[in-house]
Length: 519
Image 1: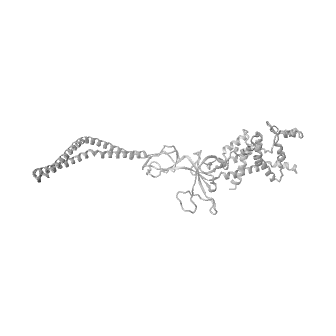
Image 2 (image 1 turned 30 degrees about the vertical axis):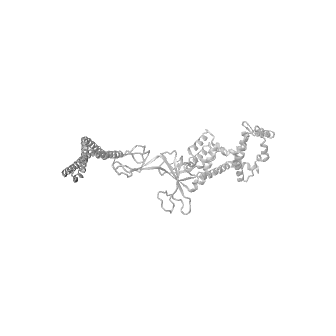
Image 3 (image 1 turned 60 degrees about the vertical axis):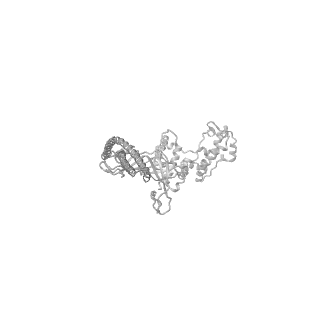
């Protein structure tokens, strides 16, 4: 029975290897889907502004066309500057006239200032005279009843007082007139400040007749030309910022547990699935418009794909693209996104191996590596695959070298009897030389290999793998250019990449079968 089964096993080994690789790929995909959410419900987005003139007028120059790329500072269009130039010239002329008036007025004021000074002195004299005459009257009034002064003297004092007061009022009036003449230039100076403000505004309006690009971008939605009247604060066209590109990806709410700003992302666009782009999550949507709920202005509306069952809501995730290609990125283009939070925070290889190495601290390097293999590679790979493949074909598997007593003995074997340079299994070969022919005792180590290396160098199988490596779904997970380099280098015998190629290939075969073909 054993003899009959041996040729059968040899025939089935390629199939077994394929199934084995598919199982590993399945584990990989399930892990990736759990830790790296992806979506095809995404589109390309860029910031835009409405190009709005600050002044009204007829467009006299427009050197741009629709969908044209422009650089920061390039002229977009020019509004007829003549009305605003005329306003500026008028304001400057009024300033010149006002400056001449101020100069003449200042000369007149110089003379008026001297007059004002003399009038001020006359006022002081008049006040002194009023004070003197009033004092004389007050002094004479009690003396008249006593006969020490005559009524005539009192009347003269009263008359002198009235005359002094009249003169004081006249001099004060002259002083007000002189002061008004001196301060008359202040109004013209204030008027000059107003004219200067009008000049500054006219210069600004004249500058606004030239509308230039505030950043590098693309002109879109251009529906006007030279001769069209442009109104202030009314958009003429839209300018798209093509220096910064984003992808708005709608993810299920169940996929957003570990998604936050800074998480790495991989982007593909439908215009070219063979290229992938790197990105970083910029922000995660905090709300969407609920179906059937009250309208909240500004919230995005995302349609659910199924209406008759309860499905998870989707929330927009804004991803900043690190290396966009302006030739491929277009506003609103379909895209795919894969988030990679686990890749950034997962344990490193030495972190996984450290606990096992700690148990054999102080041992030689060969013992340390063998201990690591026995605790990680054997139970997680070699024994697992052998057990599953044998059970799948109703075979009973025995591993005699894993017998406890054999292992206990193996632990006592010195390193020199385990490996010497490139020679391995030294103690076993010595024992085998006693009972087995030399061609068996000293033959090189061999497992159960599948000739993948040679298959991949045949044009037939090369083309099959190439079809998968350059597919749209491959670009979701890998960089097609890098995959093709691995394949080409192996095909032309520049390198031996069989393991890497076979792993990726079996994964893509499985993914196409269950995720692409059955959509």
